[in-house]
Length: 57
Image (spheres, rainbow, N blue to C red):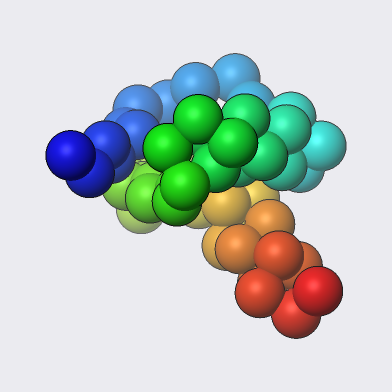
């Protein structure tokens, strides 16, 4: 089963919390998929920043 996490969660505003969420979900499920709403520009930017950081490491 693929779980897509969606919503305006508090971690979207904090890169460290978003990365912790990523790590937790990957440990539990093996992959992390995140739906974002472009209505929440700051949250979308945070998710994309964490995505790029993880992909480049």
